[in-house]
Image 1 (tube, rainbow, N blue to C red):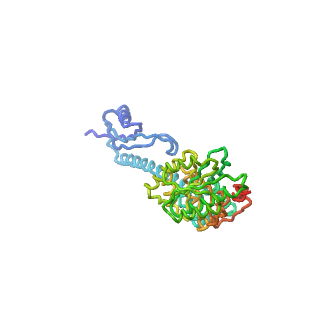
Image 2: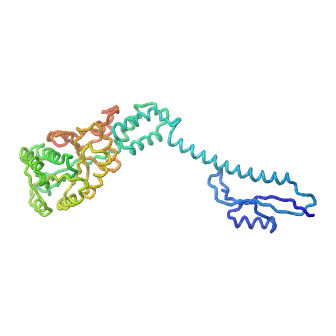
Image 3: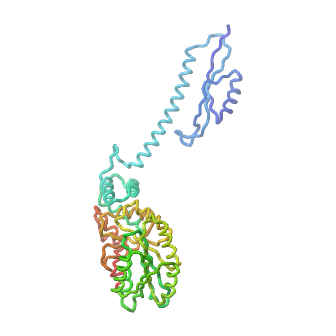
Length: 405
């Protein structure tokens, strides 16, 4: 009887077809495939490798001596050992990648615990009601830019965080108003949801621009309201206007508004008080927009938002009033809340600037031009180095300095 001695082989090639052709060339038509699998070829430690195929097989040839069972078993063990080494290498590479990811994310955090400085900053941001996304953005930046040793220096850490917050706050440039003799009147429109203090804000702006300076330099100011449906609001603005000796007009349509603007010769500033509408009342908002469009490109729209509004509602208000193409946000009722992280989070994420800050009912004292310094001072839990921050971001835009002589 003729017996065969089994010769085992392993072939790697880019494709199954090339592997099969190579096997036929080297071992002939008698060669048989034992295993077939995909492998990664080339590279270093599995990096930059290319996909390929590996086949193992055997071929028989006539021998005088019978085949050695021990040799066959040894070859089989060798093939299995090679396969296990390849799997182990892939597992090691995955572990290395996972370790790199954890190191980049945690920056030295041990056993899932944050360093004390990082935990303290997170607590302060949460106490100021910054959104989770904004807070995580700050924490990620700290991990990237601070070493473990630097995290132990909390004064330096909190100073840097304040700088990062301040850098993201956008401030609208001050309103420039001409005397009204030669230039067309500037139209400032205040829109916003019901109850945010639009009418009081209009009265404050009228006092600031119309009464604040000397008679020779102050522009002639007029107030227009399209909120004819709320008698109390109309009486309120008329009372303010009478005290300031500023004329008030009411319009109910785009045609009336156009006619008013055409006859406003010599007026430097026209302040428009609008109807307070829910962000969900889209039909009424569209009607109001049609009236305001009568002012054309000469109008400048500002969106009033209460500082007491929660972050999710602020996001909805910004989106709903987007068709009005508002230039900036007037932040009202700052005196009614101790937390403004919600407002700052949403405004910085949306890239919306702030033009004015109102913090009370007194006319015109409780309003000022927006400033980074004023908003940072409202944050709780931080040690505010006022002198340093003023050098960094400028002083508060006080009404007395900006508008009153």
